[in-house]
Length: 254
Image 1 (cartoon, one colour):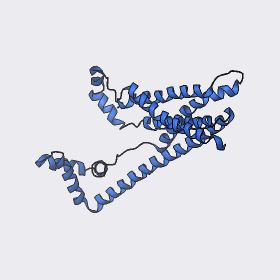
Image 2 (cartoon, one colour; image 1 turned 180 degrees about the vertical axis):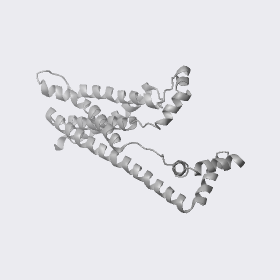
Image 3 (tube, helix red, strand yellow; image 1 turned 45 degrees about the vertical axis):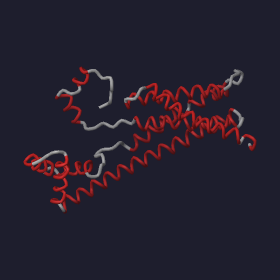
Image 4 (tube, helix red, strand yellow; image 1 turned 90 degrees about the vertical axis):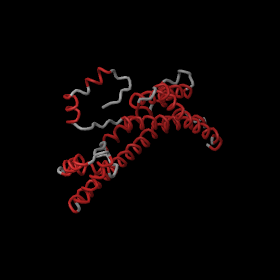
């Protein structure tokens, strides 16, 4: 279920009726990819604006800004997506390996695994016949037994996100928000007769993008949107500022 800190009591009650609970549990936990989207969005805006800042600081042309910016969008965006895919897939493979290990343990040393279940439930406050019954119920279902051992003994979630969906969310967010710093330069290239400072407008647009990503994130983590927006704006501003300073310092050697 999505976390909504200001959800009314009537809304809470409507999601906790027997029918609603049955429907929710029937389909199991649903993964969202907000983390992957926010991760890609923030990194896309930061890295592309860092490129723009560095090139602008070095006093290079609009065309070079656009070329390097697009190269960063495609190259870094794809690299991030691949990295997220491989990382998520590695977690998936680790989960499957742990599941196979537990299945083997249950098959070869069932009494030892039963004792683990007993101690897990004893630590939760079960005693006497309640403890015996809980152990019997869990160990009568091998699949449920394995899933419980994964979460309680190894601390591994029994289900995880799709590597492909995680990678896709990251890549799309990177391309979308990473393109914002380039908009002013693309506009200047398309309409050279219009006189304005593209770096100024790129800074302004990217600042709104940083703040917007942070505000969007706050809707899913229960944090105040204004503070979350300022936090992302601050982090992005530091990265862009460092890149601009480096560009200025290296201007003389280009």
